[in-house]
Length: 415
Image (tube, rainbow, N blue to C red; front, top):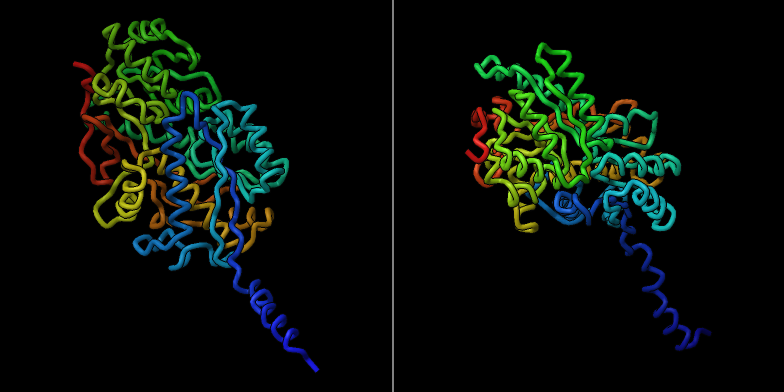
């Protein structure tokens, strides 16, 4: 005979027996490496905001963004509705710290994948750790060519790289020449870490493949406190165009020094980075009017995917998407797509899903033509816009096919 006490005890146990079927899938942990302090902190504060907004879009219902979500209820249906949980770490722009933090995220936090990491020198060390442990690393914003030239199988870079940017700059100069704005010579100025050196090499090779003379190439220490010698060297070379590859503090220092020495070339074209850093315009925007830069971001017309994602981003962050946040948004969505298709956090299955990525331009929040990785892990569909500083912000001005206003040439600077 079953006692009343036994029946009560059995009934009390029923919810516990049913609980596993009601339990939500465990979040997928990913590690995100950024320079959250140091000279590049302002740029990657915006990049971190991009990651956070992308994760929120994936994790929670966003009916206005069907191209970027995987379920009306949010989460990753391929992983039982699991959400993404980001673990952010600050490498301060230090390659050795990036290396140790990547190892901690993999071995201690047990992340399924890594994202990052802005400076190319930090991406070089952090991706080496990921390769050693066989954990996928999705690079959103580090552009030195050699990151994907080492035969790695777990590094996947979404952003365009130095060679892509160099090709864009040469197409732009050819278009300007047809428009009566011929460039008689170019000067190339780059900071001397992996980023500046690698991208500078790509641009120099592209210049030498044209008939445009390279007046001078100047390599400098990004941590230096005085660039007057470099500015005087530019002034003596007198190029039509100066291309800068610089981080924020040195970009600001160059513009201030150029004004103090009264040197302004007809045009400055910057390779993003410091010139697009949120610190740049408040510091020297008024003396840098007309400077050009590359950017993956263009707002687009009302109702476009880019306009709709900006409508989600701006109320959360307090400002529009910029290049850094756009590229980090894109990389995060690419990783989420691969996780959903893999249906697993197993590194080999996630690696295979990333290798099979084939996202069309219609799903892009950047100016990329899509995302598809070659055998080296580089996105072969990367592309960029060119922008120009006008007033308090950058405006997309090239290519004309994007339906943008024309380039103002020469730049006005502080004149």
